[in-house]
Image (cartoon, rainbow, N blue to C red):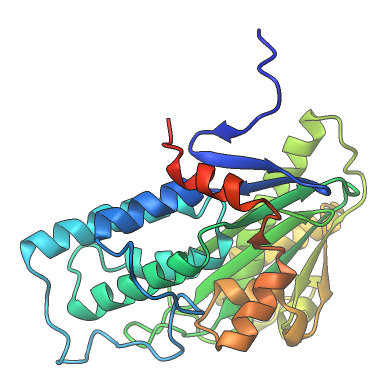
Length: 305
């Protein structure tokens, strides 16, 4: 083993040393994506996705040519690695990935909007600071949010102290018949990740004896999780019901209520207005590191190895 000194680059990520700790970003990698798309000189925009999306039933949206389809898939594949340090674009990338098999012009326009957003936020990333080691998480769902098939989207994020360490956007496999069902399936998905994180922390000798707080903004799903009575209207989510109930009983998690305004996982489930998007982005501590202009130039010109 060798001591190579302070870390500066790792797997395409730039690690900046700040007064609070470390800051992870992928400015050089994002710049390369913009260059491949021919959008290095594009005008920046304030949000990665509009609040109103074009649906597949819109006949004005036409299929892309073969060359544009290949470029679309290539860029989306690159963006999937960029979300390692950019949770703020995870929902948009997930949305675009659902149309890789047959992209349309509306999908390519959405991709260009995302790239314009990246242009204005090249140096954004996630910080790692000295904090307590208490694990807590947020779970949310956008019930029937996809107008094409009416499936819901699960959003989840976990913090270790004040550091964002895990997040996920996932389209649910089946159509939820109620908002309670959609939120409860999101709870089950978040619980599986919490169990994995708790085991990982245990391997690092970090105590996890107390239950992990899982915050949800749906009162009905919280009542269902804490109520051992199994009702006829919830038989179709029986497996998720028993799984979450068992985790609560074993004191692995505790499900608590949080107001929708403070639900950080809301950023991972639906398109948001610019003020709401920026508010949640700040709450997730996705920001630009305080580095000098010289260092910024070095980040851009540095090729990922």
